[in-house]
Length: 374
Image (cartoon, rainbow, N blue to C red; front, top):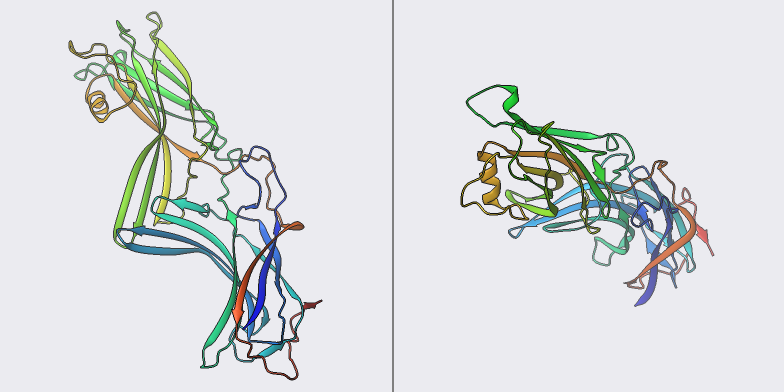
């Protein structure tokens, strides 16, 4: 048994804006991934093909059923023939072959682990040769790379302000505008990074005034959906929430609320590029603008419960509004597609074993491919 080394040397992307959470070894759609596949056989080695594959897979598992979707599937032949028709021999020495892959300029899910699945982007270098009993045998070197979707919080349309309104007739049997209470929610932009503050500006109008201080609840809600075959799992998670008292001026019958929610640093990125794994966010604003409350009704709770939400939705003065929110991956005004540089390289090796079935004699290399031997 002879020990051989097949390795991938990957160029790293230069660091960009400090607003990003972690710039080290992160690639985005439009970037070019470059590097070298190196091989140092300690004796003559037969081969049919040396190639490298670049794949991106989304995998889910629901109720013991697994599903998989490819979002990237590229391949480059570095040496030999992909159809394995001919067999060649590499002499003992050191070899290297450059490779280059361009990430498609489209939305792709960010790499990471999810509740019922995972997203992986992988480079696989493969040296294939014919086996003793027919068929092919392969040596592989695998490297996972960190790729995130390109959701730039400082670029259109995410940088544009958004708002939504909700209104309710305090006297359902009438249609007079003077009996309509309303709440208008405004956000400076629609996309935020994990760890940032989501600032909320709400304006209230209440025609009747108040003998009590109404309340308002803010919730940042994440909805996850996983599908494997016919099986589907859906989850709703409250990422952040807060409760506030509203002061409404009895003279102009208007009030306002300025607040914010802290987005957790470990928040999942938004994704909707595949049917089997989606992550969505929205801001829920629930307002209690009822003129009167029940005799036995106590203080408003600090958190929204199903019972409270159902009560306010069915009562005059209970207002609910939602605004879609995007959790982005970077905030860089000057972001542009980049090419990986090899000024700082990361060497990742995997040791592969094969039978020493190379025969002594003349070696033949593919004349159409340039190799470097040292």
